[in-house]
Image (cartoon, rainbow, N blue to C red; front, side):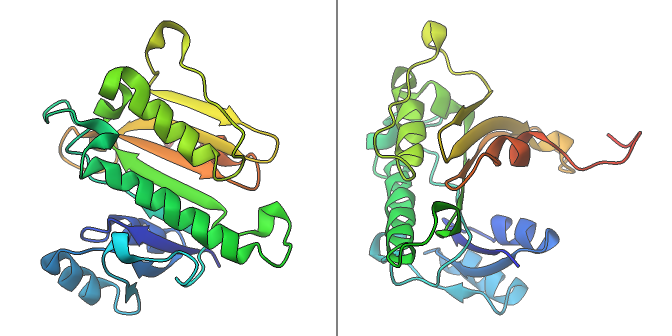
Amino acid sequence: MLTMGSLFDGIGGFPLAAVHNGIVPLWASEIESFPIEVTKIRFPKMLHVGDITKLDGSKLPVVDIICGGSPCQDLSVAGKRAGLEGERSGLFMEQIRITKEMRCADGNDGKANDLIRPRFFVWENVPGAFSSQNGEDFKAVLEETVRIADHTVSVPRPTGGVWKSAGCILGREFSLAWRVLDAQYWGVAQRRKRIFLVADFGGHTAPQILFEQDRLLGNT
């Protein structure tokens, strides 16, 4: 059974999705007291590990998936557009750091790449990330994520300089895909677009995970 760790957990959106798909949320990082109380009730077996800036990925319980929706204020078109250099949105790099630390510790015994955990990485944020710092911030998100698997990778800017709402990157042993989803088509009574990014550090499943839906004939 797959396991998951949730960073920037809020009221447990990622753990809720996990349990609906047979994934066990082992731990969560959150600093606000009210969301923590909510998730303690909803997920009583989930460990609360505290402030993301104080975590050591090598010492956390190892999980198959690390999820996180880092603060969006500095990336949003409604904010001051400080981007990844901003105090809040820059916390994305903590998700990268923790993932690297956990994979480094788990791979110390010479495991094959597809067995090193976390194998999967999920990031969620506002579409403003595409244009933040003239597109350089999203380029940095892609590069920092794929460099967890291969530190030599450089991601080029797209033709025309504008990031598309969906795309993927395939490496020799890794894959990454991103897609904008709108909450109104997923059972929520409001329009709310968000980027979802999935990385598979041990194979080429990221596009399959993000773009291929399970459904029955005639059921959209």
